[in-house]
Amino acid sequence: MTNILFPSFAQAAPAGAKVGVKAGVLDGIMNAGPMVQVLLLLMIALSVVSWAIIFTKYRQYEALKQANAKFSERFWKSNSLDKIYDQVNDDSESSLARVFKAAYLELQRLADSSGPGKGGQESQTRLSGLDNLERTVRKAVDTEIASAESRLNFLATTGSTSPFVGLLGTVIGIMTSFSHIAASGSASLAVVAPGISEALFSTAVGLFAALPAVAAYNYFVTQVRRMEMDLNNFGSDFLNIAKRNFFRND
Image (cartoon, rainbow, N blue to C red; front, top):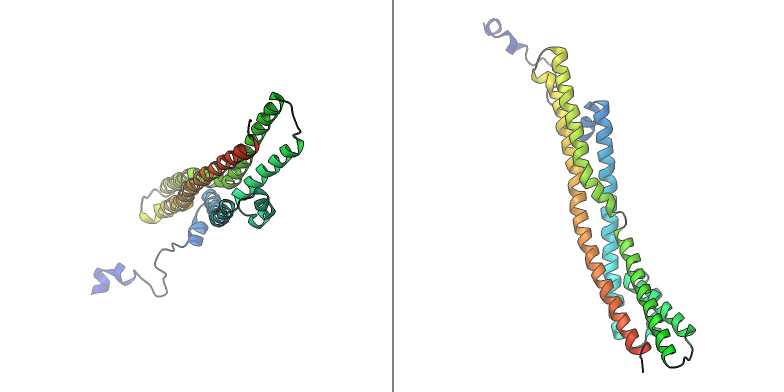
């Protein structure tokens, strides 16, 4: 009696039928259309490279912090620039040490090239040398900041473009659903589900690639600004020491 009134219930789930939706990453890529697959692979590649940069830059900045703290302590405890320079290679990972090395070598060149002058001529020569030392310090600081900022632009690019790439995949998925509706003449869930699924999956992958990149970029930019401040302060301190001891106008 039940089979006559409700025949569909008896045949709704035949033996061995597979029911459910696969929502894994590989399934999402394999079930998407060719264009969406290209976009998904592009966003996944951007995400992988971004995470590699994040781990690399984090280790770089932590190493710089430790090396700079070690060199700064040695610098202020020492009473001789020559002694610091003799040990500067022990702090090869320190950006402060590299700035000091460049400034010390320029100061040494000025000392070697300067000779006994006459009256104001010696004072003018020393003032010109001081300008050269200041330019050397600024150049060394700029070089260190450029090194610290390297590859951060990739994180910024990933964070700003991945959502739009995902949105493009979303649009293509919606268009696929409409084309299936037009072809079948039906708007049932079985018709629209594949296109909607790849649209939502594309959006999710775009956000997954963008959010960590944006967060890491903002964090690293803050770290670089702090490094820049420390380097500028150290450069100013070195120039003050040089002015007091090597560029006196008697």
